Image (cartoon, rainbow, N blue to C red; front, side):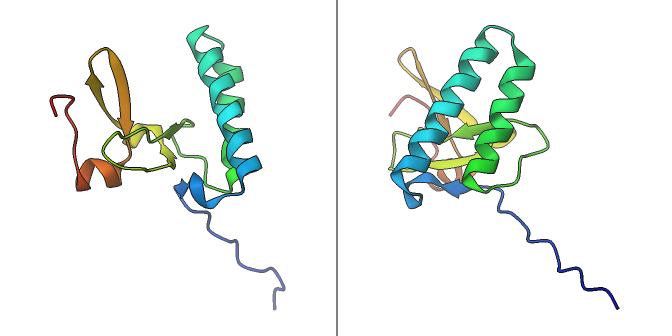
Length: 112
């Protein structure tokens, strides 16, 4: 008989406002650094920062290897999730990101 405990399944997304402020702040800093590296084509560094961010907040790193933050202007959503599931819209010249829940509940087009 084995004494190995079953692996705990990690969630695929998390709402950051439910985390302690210092964790939320550190997550935002990691994601900002990942974006900065991605903009400069430092993709390995960006991928490592996404992995650190996922581990910090306790979610499964998605198969895409990239996280996104919901910046929906239709509600107050602080969801961190798989970037491959993101839906975006332009409001003027600013691009906003919707998580799947926001995109289903109140899709935005930028024409509101």
